[in-house]
Length: 109
Image: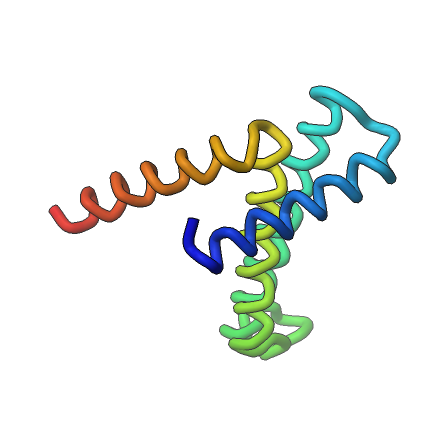
């Protein structure tokens, strides 16, 4: 694993462990909750992006590029927490590496 990917996965495992300790949910319910959390974070990203475009009539230009970048990182971390909740960090790392290679090759066609 590269340094940043290793740090991302390690931090995701720490977050996952905290969620497990603090949540009354287990099994599929916990996984579903994490999926919903990912959707919530994606919604916050959309809100920030709309805010940079001034597309909320009540708020106008309410967000900055920095806000958008923070929300992107939140989405990445939340998705990684979900991934390491479903399978081991090592398996996820391998899948991520393979999928990135596939998607990059497809984009280059």
